[in-house]
Length: 410
Ligand SMILES: Nc1ncnc2c1ncn2[C@@H]1O[C@H](COP(=O)(O)OP(=O)(O)OP(=O)(O)O)[C@@H](O)[C@H]1O
Ligand SMILES: [Mg+2]
Image 1 (tube, rainbow, N blue to C red):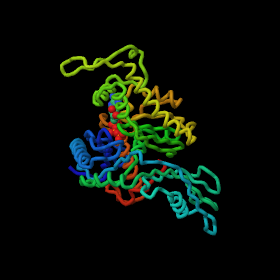
Image 2: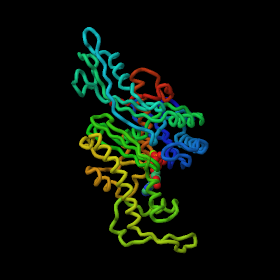
Image 3: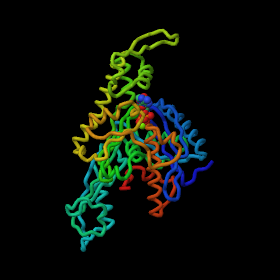
Image 4: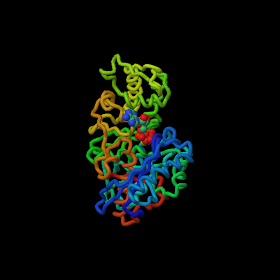
């Protein structure tokens, strides 16, 4: 077993499962998924690690499984990060062009980007991504590459995603304790969007929503670049909690009922129907009204979508989503969820697929693996960019540039 520079690995430490996806990149840059490992997650709450020892063991188990399947030794990973502490916002940097001939140089571009990144974050926070959107030269907007143009004032819009530094470091330290190197941390919402969206969809405008167990990430792309990103500390497990509370059943039973009978909209068949909950001996302990069960689910999921829709409306992005909404994450398995989302967003909603990659379909077809597959895609794009620049290739990239990485138009 070996790891060579063509191997790219994504690791998501989720609230419900820990997932490792191994990709192999060919000379043309295309990625084939060759390995998948997972273990149940028991030390993560709302996307954040709360029991390091448990998670460490579970990461080791998932890595081992992925290594066996892919027949490679994994030494480094692209690590997904999420949690309610992660926020995204747009920021503009301004820079006066001072050269005598007024021609914009590469240094001017670097300076204006530096200015856009010099933001007042809370002291305990750090930048995870600073993504260039577009430049303005003397007020002319939509400039993608200003180098060589004449101008007096150069501006750039960036999307900055930041989070709590210690919590991010805790995830990195945990992975390092398993003898793995972390190439880079990546917001899982961005990873899922990379997995699901084509370049055309990013150009047209699309919203990706990843409904996990403890969190829901959402990311908006339009004109090829990221416009908005956020995390809600609410996921499929909250739907189970609501069911446990509303139906007065234990949480484990509520989760089972959700998986077996759940729907995001009340079905005709559910009306007047009851489900008997029996014990191991087959004795009926309780009957549950199916319509009531589905109503509870519908209300919680509707609220989740409404919060996102409201945020996008506030950001003025609703009219930019011409390719529609794409769902992923285990929470998107609820029947009729796309229909419910269509009602809320008033646009086309579909279940996303990691279409741009080949390999084991067990990974590619499952909505809960979108983030880990996207991490592989992120890593492969990074490799290609590095190769184009003639720098060091492979997955053994430095941890030094972990914070403040760039996701340029691709
Ligand atoms: N068939 C199903 N019907 C309804 N919900 C489902 C189904 N299958 C999985 N889920 C829900 O999906 C959620 C887990 O999704 P996922 O694996 O994407 O989460 P995660 O990535 O581990 O968590 P997070 O991203 O929030 O940290 C759980 O709440 C689970 O109950
Ligand atoms: Mg997840």
